Amino acid sequence: MDYQEWSELWGKLRKDAGNVDGVKSAWKIPPPRECLKMGWEFPEGYRKRSTGRGEQEIEGWFLGVKGSRKLHSLVSSGHTESYSVTGVLHNVGLAIRRPKNRIADCLGILHTTKRPHPLAVEVKVSPSAGGLWFAAVENLQQVRMLRSNVANAQKDFERRGDADFKGAWGLVLVSEKYLSKCGGEMAQVEGLLACLNAKQTRARIMVAVADMRNDIIRHVGGYWPFERALESPPSCAPLFTCP
Image (cartoon, rainbow, N blue to C red):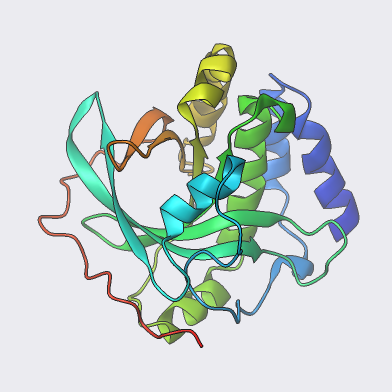
């Protein structure tokens, strides 16, 4: 299957809510060579000039100012532990070709006790841009691409001063308003993510609310690390200053 066919398959599945078997089958198809992108030669932090509305507001909050990183706490009402998440890169193209490219809104790092995990982040604030199923499948495609390209992604992060990575995880980061309108899809999405979290796939996808008022990432569905949290967060000092 070439890249266009593979990408179009995922595009159809985003709109086919409830098709768990279809997504499972797509996940098992190895991403084409066009997904082996070498790296991302742009500065860290939020890179757009406008920050005020919609997805841009959450992206800016997650990433912090251009030339820096931002550290967050990932919390869950169902668990006592919390985890550190670092916002790193903005608008990350995951393929080497522009047609049918898949863009992760943000790329971050999830810090667990064992190893840090690269984190593909899909931001949603309006149901008109797709419901929760749409967002989850979109994020799954991003993670599938990133998992197939761990070696090159790791080189890019090592160049930025980061430690050894393991795998790749995903985060659907939404507004509270979006969740209230799309929450009826949560059962479908939870079923899909639970199925893909099996040993055969290990697709680690989380759904969380950007709680900007309390400055936390609030986990509401999908995978949870189930580990002892890090005792102290990593340093989040900028690695370089942008011109």
